[in-house]
Length: 63
Image 1 (cartoon, rainbow, N blue to C red):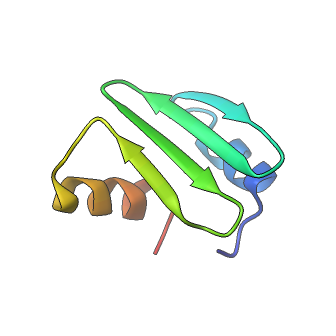
Image 2 (image 1 turned 120 degrees about the horizontal axis):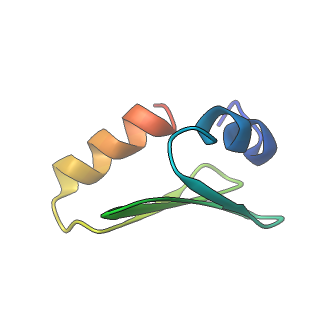
């Protein structure tokens, strides 16, 4: 991941509700929630479809 969680929070501030912790950023944009960890891994809540989850990650977090 090239952005820090702080930089990512700024980038996503207009997309949805952001909550930050030292090692995780949570982006809530119903019906989805994306939890991004400082190592770049993420948990996508609100879908069981892998393609939708990958698309959300790519669109909002990056490659």
